[in-house]
Image 1 (cartoon, rainbow, N blue to C red):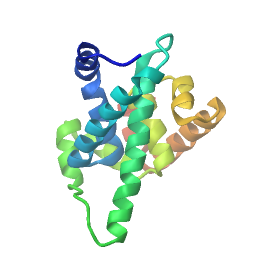
Image 2 (image 1 turned 60 degrees about the horizontal axis):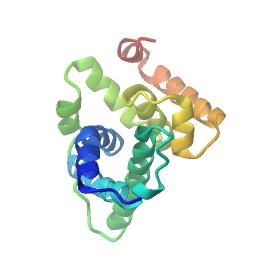
Image 3 (image 1 turned 90 degrees about the horizontal axis):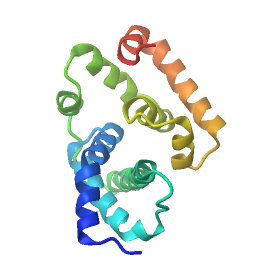
Length: 171
């Protein structure tokens, strides 16, 4: 089953802000997030026939977004290795776009310093509001691994900035 133009427009309009927000949170780069949005929707439209309509579409879209983000980040590392420095805006740009008050800016700074796997689960669970079972499916890991990554991420965040965590996530 191929996607028709009307379905494609609907999917894009319904999920573009979600995909961009996730890409921005994972990369901290406006220009890279824009590239990821474009590439993700190309993949969504190309692979739509593989989507199981009996399942919710949001986790499937997030999985494609996450895989596209990982691929783009790997590509950026190779570009840096070969002396072509990618466009990486200062953290203030993303902070002003995504987070308005000082405590949330501080939280974003702390989250951005987490290792990639821990940052992914924090973004998916607390920012994108995915369930642990959805995260496990997206990451293609057992539920226990997701719980472990989330626990480790929360411990790292608590150790670094406990007060910021409690305010932002109501812990």
